Amino acid sequence: MRAVIALAAALGSLLLGGCLLRPGGQETLRARSWEKDAEVAAVTPKVVRALRSALTSLPLPENRTTANKNGIYQFEQASKCKAIQDNILSSSIKKKRSELASCCDAVHNFIASQNNTPLGSNMSYEVDNKKTILITEDIFRMLPMSSPLSVYPFKNCAVVGNGGILKNSSCGAEIDRSDFVFRCNLPPTTGSISKDVGNKTNLVTVNPSIIAQKYNKLNEKKTEFLENIAVYGDAFLLLPAFSFRSNTATSFKVYQTLQEFKATQRAIFFHPTYLKSLAQFWRTKGVKAYRLSSGFMITSAAVELCENVKLYGFWPFSKSAEKMPISHHYYDNQLPKPGFHAMPKEYNQILQLHGKGILKLQFGKCESE
Image (cartoon, rainbow, N blue to C red; front, side, top):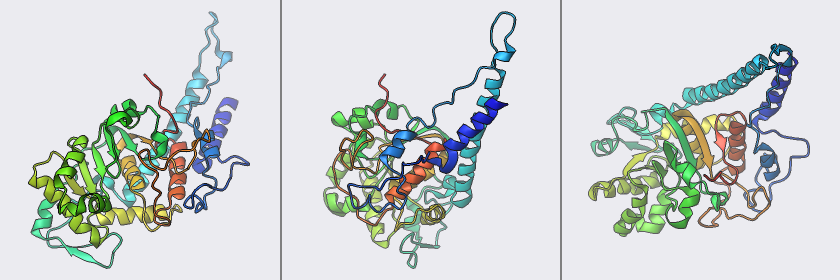
């Protein structure tokens, strides 16, 4: 019984707030102006170092009072403790999936489809919510009949962020072994960097600003665009066509370009109602920002769509846990627009999900084969 109580106490410590916040672990986020925005000042590299082994299996005590005549010890009590631990973690995962499903239902609502977007309806934009768009026959035909991600759950999913922590991580092979790989904002995956970030991509988000700035809204440079996205194979390109009215034409142009050139990639669109519901859900958890980041949106959906979720390249600090300087992205050091996303608060929630076993967060280098 003492072993069970000790295990429960240890798990209570592990799950309290989800972050293993230890005395003296609350430091102010430094180095970048957007880091200083953190009201959740407990989210620091120091705390993260403490979390690296947070989900390592707890030591299971031997019940030596049940030794048989041959001196072989049975571990009945240890098995009970392990069952309690597994049950607590399983309950946490089911509860969070249930919470997200009740609020947002990524299985049916994550992607705009003909099933959830009636022909002739007026759809409200996610952010420009006072503006609507009429779902004409042309728009309706762009939508899949049902969500292409509704064939769930995927077994093992990798959500690959673009953080500089991925450099020299050797995580590429591990990422590529995942059943489904999510990426954000058309990141580079070829060349020497592939050993760190992998090549496999099943879904990648596309910020319309990239299309506007790099490809002149596809009024030209279509060939360059198609050549660059060829590295993603037959991945879905996920666009926020219905978030801002200014995004619509560019997002539709991506769809039309893929159709025109019979590309293997397929353009799909976030459903604005899903994104509004998701933002409201996380607002109740303290994530109050102008808009959630793409990485956090994808992570939230993956928790519903996948049995096991592992995050790579999520790190909102200018230094590693070993205090080594790292770039903001693994491919550049361009900082996000101040005040647009609440990165530290999002990361706090991700740490809590990690601490509760709902997902796994890769903090540094992956084990080489």
